[in-house]
Amino acid sequence: MSSLTRRRFLRDASTATAAAVLPPFFLQTSSKSGNRLPVVGSGAHTYECVHEWLVPPDGLVWGDTHGLAQDAQGHIYVAHTVNKSSMRGEAVVVYDASGRFVRAFGEEFRGGAHGLGVRREKSEEVLYHCDINQCKMTKTTLKGEPLWTHGYPREDSAYGARPIDFVPTNVAFAPNGDFYVGDGYGSHHVLRFSSDGKFLGEVGQPGHADGDFDTPHGLFVDTRGAEPVLVIADRGNRRVQTFSLEGTHLRTIKQEPQLRMPCHFHTQGEWMVCPDLDSQVCILDLQYKVVAQLGDGRASNGEVGSRRKQSRSEFTPGQFITPHAAIFLHSGDLLVAEWLPIGRLTLLRRV
Image 1: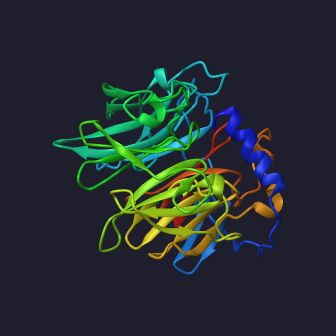
Image 2 (image 1 turned 90 degrees about the vertical axis):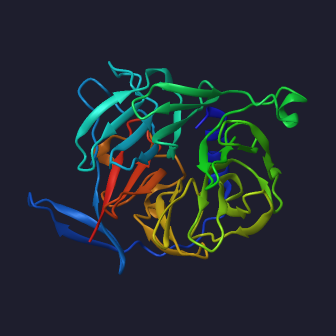
């Protein structure tokens, strides 16, 4: 998060009306080592909670763990800002499907690594990086070799007419090759590009009415229905919105207190996972209804971001602090990255 955006969200969180929430479903189970692991959720959405499942290699210290992706081979990519105390500077760390370290790269993204997306283009997969420090989008190979970079969108008249901020937070990919970029920490625009990086136009506009955005933080093209739909986490407005791929507004979805500060999305089968910065990870059905609130720690965590200065030993097992990214792994398990200055990667292992 940019410092300005963080301050605004902390202010919004402190002034929002507190809503009554049910205590999270919470059990205990034993791991192979004999340690008891918290279990969150219920029914089809029951998971063992394995905190610190991914750890950085020697010499590298997590910063804010912001972005997650998994490629077709099962390799997991973590984007983080790199802690100031770190002796190493790689902002992208790669693991195999079992959680073993593979490689690290991306020192150029140190301090700014945020949204991360992977997709196949022609015969190979590539990564899209959102850099909130250098205010640009970069496409690289899976090993970090640069292929394409796009900074301030001067071809968009909304930006070219006057000097306004551009701070891209996340990217989404359409089946036809187009992709969408959320200017979540800058001027609250959503930009649409062709597969070769040509600017095609905007979706929505900044504001608070239907079809408007206040921090379009995360976005995802949902292909679970008959037609693909662009889903946007309109976090500042505390809601989710859907659009056609051409940019027509379809729905506005508000579900407080179940869905509070949606950050991003990922799907597997009929389910969508939505990390929520306000202390939980939600599972949404085909109609974007919240069917599970995993690790909901709102009652004990206080205002959003208020526990960021705490040590790991002070975090409550089985509860989230500030979920920022979450993906379904190929195994069906969930991986969650949290906006914490010492980072945290939690595996939700399906029970």
